[in-house]
Image (cartoon, rainbow, N blue to C red; front, side, top):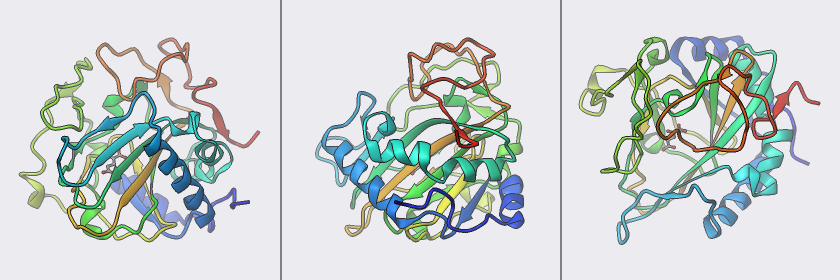
Amino acid sequence: MPHAEPLRPITDAEVAAYDRDGAVLLKGLIDLEWVELLRQAVEADKAKPGAMVRYNTAPGGAGEFFVDFQLWRRWEQSRRFAIDGPGGAIAARMMGAQAINYYHDHLLVKEPGTQERTPWHHDQPYYPVEGWMVGSIWLPLDPVPKDVCVEFIPGSHRWERWFAPQFFKTGNPELRVQDPRFEVIPDFEAERDQHQLLSWELAVGDCIFFHGLVVHGASGNPSPQGRRRAYATRWLGEDTRYAARSGQISPPIEGHGLQPGDPMDCELFPRVWPRA
Ligand SMILES: O=C(O)CCC(=O)C(=O)O
């Protein structure tokens, strides 16, 4: 049985860094048995993807940028990680939340040779969710050299700016999610030298916890060696509410039955912390 709890206490300094920067590296927190289980789920999913799968590499292109969602609804290993794993405890500690609901998972595999970047964006505008307690655990299932790690613009979660979401695949149209707060995202790649970007080298068992409004992006995985399988899970604290959005949200999770203003609490977004 993998450890249900984080392997060590999260320090006050780590929580403070998250609060200040919007993203923090948490070393040695996840039992490697979880990583092995999630690798099994990822390989099963790549062989038989779900309805929301996206192939972000053009046919014939080098490598492959494979994206899928909601593995936890189809693969037992991912379901166990969501419900019985350490994520709820980690999210509660990092966000200062009393209660955590699981929102969704997002798999991002970049096979060796992948040229496509993950474009600069932040996550919360993609979601029909209001509230501050929106956080992700970015858990790599392979060692991650710094140059293929996600990069974060520290402090951008506190800018009080919301950038209009776009599909990750180059050339795809905007998602057309409407919200009066949205503005066109600046070309952060062009201005990358103006920001003291945060990124890290990660070993297996490390993860990054980041805020739903922190701006981030990632390189491809151009080297011919080393897969970059990243399993991102999204966690919501008690201040979050379902919000109406027009246009296409992402991931397009349907069937939850929530109305605007409802707590994000239902079978599709289950309460995972405190444990039942
Ligand atoms: O893994 C990546 O390339 C990007 C991850 C990301 O954008 C996310 O988890 O929101």
